[in-house]
Image (cartoon, rainbow, N blue to C red):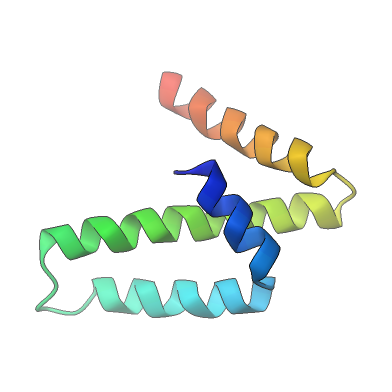
Length: 82
C-alpha cells in the first residue's frame, strides 16, 4: 500500500474506472501462466485501487480528501499491528 499511489488513483480516476481495472487485474491473476512476481505486482495494484475506492467513498460521505487518505492509512497500519 502506497498512499501517494492511492492519492493519484483517487484524483485521476472515477470509482467506475477503478472497479473496471480491479476486475481486469483479478482476472489476470487467475490466468494459468502468470508467475509469482506478476501476481505480486498485480496484488499491490489491487490493494492501491481498493484503497482509492475506499477514499472515494469516504469523500462522498463528507470526509476531506486529506483526512480520508490519512484514515485509510491508519486503518491499514492498525490492522498490520494486530
